[in-house]
Every structure is written in C-alpha cells, then in structure tokens.
Length: 587
Image (cartoon, rainbow, N blue to C red):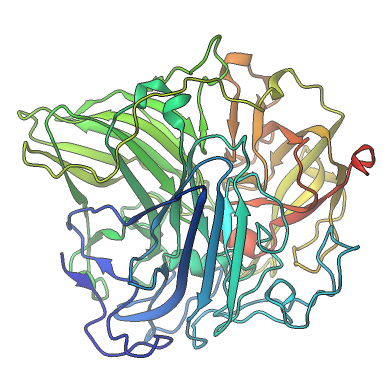
C-alpha cells in the first residue's frame, strides 16, 4: 500500500523523534485492512491515545461547502487521528458490559490549524453538578477557551453519564499540550454491538471528523443475543469522509461528490490524477479491495462516521443483489424481544445508515466463479439545498482460497439471553414534545453565504412555525428543555428545511414509534441512536418522526441532542435537555 501524502520529516505537533505521518491515508484501489484490536482483560481496558494533527501538502484541503468558508488554496489536507504510543491509528476498542474503560488522552495536535473555533467556554460548575466541589482552574472539564487544536472524546451510543471524565462532550476541552483521563464504566445493561468514538468540540467538530479522528468501539456479547453470528469471522469498516481536492461546489445530480469517502482510510476517488488537484472527474470511482474465501460467511460491522453522508448500502455479485442478514442497528440487536432467548436477523438487500449510525450484518462471500463482487453506496438525494452524493463503490471483493483469515472471530454461543432494559414499546410516556429543524440564511441576498441552523421546541404547519424562539447553540446556553430522571417521553420532530437532517440524543437510545404521524406496528418499531428525516419538498406536509426517549436510567445532568450532519450542528443545530435527579432516589 502506498501512503498518501507525508513523505518524511517531522510534522507540526509530533512528539520528539517522530518522523512519520501519524495519520496515514491510503491511495484509491488499496487493500482494505483491519486496524489494531484492543481487548479488555479482567474487566478493564486501559489505553493511551495521542491526538495528532498534520497537513498532507499533496492534497489541497478544499471543503467545497459554503459552511464553513473553505481554507486557502495553498493549504493541504488537514488530517487528525488518535494513535497509541506505538503508532496504531484509531484502534478498535473491545469491552464487555460492566467493564471499566480508561483512556488517557494526550493532545499533541498543532495549534496552527486552518479552520476556526467559534466560541469561548467559561464554566465555574459542571451542569447537573451544582453541589460538587469547585473544580480546579483550567481543568479540562472547565476549560477557559477552545482553540482549533482542542479535542475531547464522545463515546457515541454508550448509555453513560454526561459528566466530567465520562461522556460530557460539550464541556470537556483538552487543549494542545494537555492530558486528560476518561474513566468510563460500561453499563451492565449496555446492548452488545458496534459503537464508536470521536472528538466533539463544538464549532470544530465537523473539521476534526473530516480529518479522520474516529474509531470503532465494540461491546462484546452479541452472540448471546443473536446466535446466528456465533463463530463468524469479523470485518469492521469505518467509513469516513474527507474534502475533495477540487474547488467548485458540485452540482446536485452530478458525478462530482461533495466529499470523498474513505473505508478504513482507503480513499474512494474519481479524480483522474489523485491526489493532485483534480483536472477531471472520471465518474468512475476506484474502490478499496478485500479478499474473502469463496462462500465464507462473515459478520460485517459498518460505522458511518462521515459528517454529512447517508450511506445506502448494497452488495452485488455479477450485478445480482445479495441478501444481507441485518443483525444490529446502532449497537442494538434487532428482534431482540422475540419470545424466548435470542433474536432473529432481518433479511434485506438494502441497508441505509445515516451519518453517525452503524449497522451489523452477515455477508456470504462470492463463489469462485463470480467475476465482479462490489459493495457500494447508492446515490442519495438530500434535497435541493443539500449536498451531492453520487453512487460509489466502496469495496471490490476478490474471492480467493488464500484470503487471509480475520483477526477477530465471534465466540461460540455460551449464554443465550434476551436483551434487557428496552421495554419502551409498552411504556407510557409521561410527556409529549414537538421539535423542528429549521435553517435561515444569515444574508437572504447571498444564497451561498453562511446559514444559521436551529433545533427548536415547537410545531410547524403551512409554512409557519410556533413555539420557542429559535436559538443558535452555544455550550454556554442554559438547557432548552428540562425533565426528571425516571420519565419516558415521546418527541415528534419535524423537518422544515429543504435538505435532510438526522436526529440524535446522547447518553440513551430511543424507540421509533411513528413516521409522518402514522404509528408503526410494534414489530416495525426499532431502537436506534440516529434517525434520518428527509427534506421538505416545499409543498407537502413536513416530514416527521416520533421517538420514545427513556430517561429512566441512572444518568442525570445536561444531555445533548442534535443533528448529526456536523456542519449543521456546528452552526447551531444542537441543544441541551437537563435531566434532574428523581427526588424519590434521594437518600
């Protein structure tokens, strides 16, 4: 494999003596490889992750989106990563329910970055911890300011507390040169499956994630819920996005993407002379390459860690659609509440994974006679004011009896069980709320200028929205909503914008109970972390989804909810709900 970009010499932010690019990227057409897997032992996984930034001078870092404003032409591609002390980039972390996850983060990123932070944070006390002792000045959980090099960790999908040292992604700021330790207890009732980690500093979240700083996190034990995966070899694919080395904003419907995709850092590009500035897009994308033993069944785990791109996944062998056995969505095994222990997979030929979502499914490899086996994402329209996402192949599968064996294999079933803690379908909500996504140009006369994005409590009808005043998010904002620990709530979320949005709430899963006002049958309701809302066509009723939120867990504090299209979130489409302690739990 040819490393794209860095060709020796020290980089800005490197530790002493380090001469290689800490965040390597791979040329189009490279073999896709699995990253290092780190496993807990005796109930503990402890790891050090160094956060790096570097610039690949061979690929102009041109984000074609109007928000944020693109960096100068001379700037290279900004790259970010978390790496172990021995240089393993974005390791896959494996833990069991009840384990302790300890991560020592060292921020070695350069402060000379091309994009700008948009806010200053100044906290005296952590939200939800008003009775806690006064924190030390300049503690990372109460940083005086953010910089373009700031970082932190968000454990996407884990049901852990929004507290310092756990999953408080908006208030924990680790600036360049600082160290900080996360000490997370994985809940005993955390569903087994695929989760992921990333930095989430408001205002620079989009740029850092485009830079590549995302990795997979596995909660083990899925074979006890889904026996169909027992004994299968595993492939984990983290799909990321990065700027296209091409300046003009691409036309909707064209073959020029708004962002390039990568699979385990193998770039999927249609640029004729990649990685140099594109002089011509061929419309023919070069996928990554994977060898599989003919006919072998594998469990594929796919994280969509792109900041903006819905994935519409299909697998074709010589043009024929293949059946994928869906095992889990957003870390939650499907059909896990069937009568008796264990769930059933769902046979599908198409799996849609929104930005920040994940999916796990069983794949049967091609026979030796198959000439063209391709795993692809289809063209995905996100609206007239959305972005351009053409159809792209992600992986070409080569059947070979000599294909290397997977480094990870699911254990055999040892303790079949039902999934606990998700009785939301029969739960009675104490409160219902209405929220809506909206967008407003800062300058109505400049359609390519900056846009303000809002997520507001209220209702839209006939082109008008009523309710709370739309407010741009800042970590300094008070909570927009308040609830009490022990509550179950139904939220109906509308999309009044002419581009897609996706709803996510931290620290808990939700159950999708209705779409466009139509209740879903119980057997079609699904537990998720992210739900996609299609764009409004300007004529019909606003698209909507109703989700049932479970605040009955142990977590209290300020819980973030947001759009997972990160340009939207960084430009205001976030808010807090404060979960107050249940008085009946007081000692």
